[in-house]
Amino acid sequence: MEVPEMLDLLKKKALTDKKLREELLETRKSEHPLEAFCEKCREQGYPVYEMELIGAGEEFYASMKRSTNGGGENSPVLEGEDDFYELFFAGL
Image (cartoon, rainbow, N blue to C red; front, side):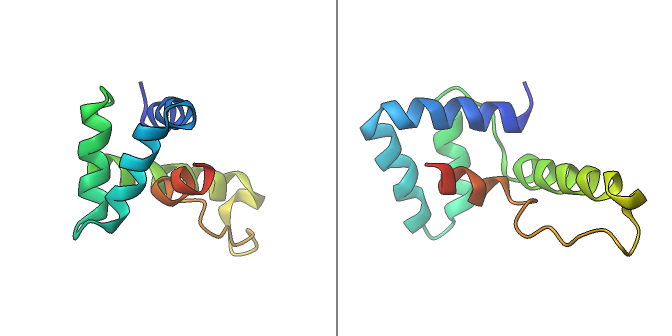
Protein backbone atom coordinates (compact mmCIF):
# COMPACT_ATOMS: atom_id res chain seq x y z
CA MET A 1 0.00 0.00 0.00
CA GLU A 2 1.30 3.45 -0.90
CA VAL A 3 1.64 6.37 1.54
CA PRO A 4 -1.37 8.34 0.19
CA GLU A 5 -3.65 5.32 0.61
CA MET A 6 -2.38 4.67 4.13
CA LEU A 7 -2.94 8.30 5.10
CA ASP A 8 -6.44 8.21 3.64
CA LEU A 9 -7.33 5.11 5.66
CA LEU A 10 -5.83 6.60 8.81
CA LYS A 11 -7.73 9.85 8.31
CA LYS A 12 -11.03 7.96 7.87
CA LYS A 13 -10.29 6.04 11.07
CA ALA A 14 -9.41 9.25 12.95
CA LEU A 15 -12.60 10.96 11.82
CA THR A 16 -14.61 8.29 13.62
CA ASP A 17 -12.27 7.81 16.60
CA LYS A 18 -12.05 10.98 18.69
CA LYS A 19 -9.18 9.70 20.84
CA LEU A 20 -7.06 8.83 17.80
CA ARG A 21 -7.84 12.20 16.19
CA GLU A 22 -6.70 14.00 19.35
CA GLU A 23 -3.52 11.90 19.53
CA LEU A 24 -2.69 12.70 15.91
CA LEU A 25 -3.32 16.41 16.45
CA GLU A 26 -1.15 16.31 19.58
CA THR A 27 1.83 15.17 17.47
CA ARG A 28 1.92 18.65 15.93
CA LYS A 29 3.01 20.05 19.31
CA SER A 30 6.03 17.75 19.50
CA GLU A 31 9.58 19.05 19.15
CA HIS A 32 9.77 16.86 16.01
CA PRO A 33 6.16 16.79 14.76
CA LEU A 34 6.76 14.83 11.54
CA GLU A 35 8.63 12.11 13.44
CA ALA A 36 5.92 11.95 16.12
CA PHE A 37 3.21 11.76 13.46
CA CYS A 38 4.94 8.90 11.64
CA GLU A 39 5.41 7.02 14.92
CA LYS A 40 1.67 7.34 15.58
CA CYS A 41 0.96 6.05 12.05
CA ARG A 42 3.12 3.00 12.71
CA GLU A 43 1.41 2.41 16.07
CA GLN A 44 -1.85 2.21 14.14
CA GLY A 45 -0.41 -0.33 11.70
CA TYR A 46 0.47 2.02 8.84
CA PRO A 47 4.22 1.84 8.06
CA VAL A 48 4.75 5.52 7.27
CA TYR A 49 8.26 6.95 7.62
CA GLU A 50 9.35 10.57 7.35
CA MET A 51 11.33 10.36 4.11
CA GLU A 52 8.67 8.21 2.44
CA LEU A 53 6.02 10.76 3.38
CA ILE A 54 8.09 13.65 2.02
CA GLY A 55 9.09 11.71 -1.09
CA ALA A 56 5.52 10.67 -1.85
CA GLY A 57 4.39 14.29 -1.83
CA GLU A 58 7.23 15.41 -4.05
CA GLU A 59 6.66 12.53 -6.47
CA PHE A 60 2.95 13.30 -6.67
CA TYR A 61 3.62 16.99 -7.27
CA ALA A 62 6.21 16.25 -9.96
CA SER A 63 3.74 13.97 -11.72
CA MET A 64 1.06 16.67 -11.66
CA LYS A 65 3.53 19.26 -12.91
CA ARG A 66 4.59 17.05 -15.84
CA SER A 67 0.97 16.45 -16.81
CA THR A 68 0.20 20.15 -17.32
CA ASN A 69 1.51 21.62 -20.56
CA GLY A 70 4.35 19.13 -20.59
CA GLY A 71 5.67 20.41 -17.27
CA GLY A 72 7.34 23.41 -18.81
CA GLU A 73 7.62 26.97 -17.59
CA ASN A 74 3.95 27.62 -18.38
CA SER A 75 2.74 25.00 -15.93
CA PRO A 76 0.60 26.47 -13.16
CA VAL A 77 2.10 26.89 -9.71
CA LEU A 78 0.44 24.40 -7.39
CA GLU A 79 0.46 25.55 -3.78
CA GLY A 80 0.80 22.88 -1.11
CA GLU A 81 0.08 19.97 -3.42
CA ASP A 82 3.35 18.31 -2.43
CA ASP A 83 2.76 18.22 1.33
CA PHE A 84 0.72 15.15 2.24
CA TYR A 85 1.43 15.80 5.92
CA GLU A 86 -0.29 19.21 5.85
CA LEU A 87 -3.06 17.93 3.58
CA PHE A 88 -3.74 15.14 6.06
CA PHE A 89 -4.30 17.61 8.88
CA ALA A 90 -6.33 19.96 6.70
CA GLY A 91 -8.75 17.09 6.10
CA LEU A 92 -8.81 16.07 9.74
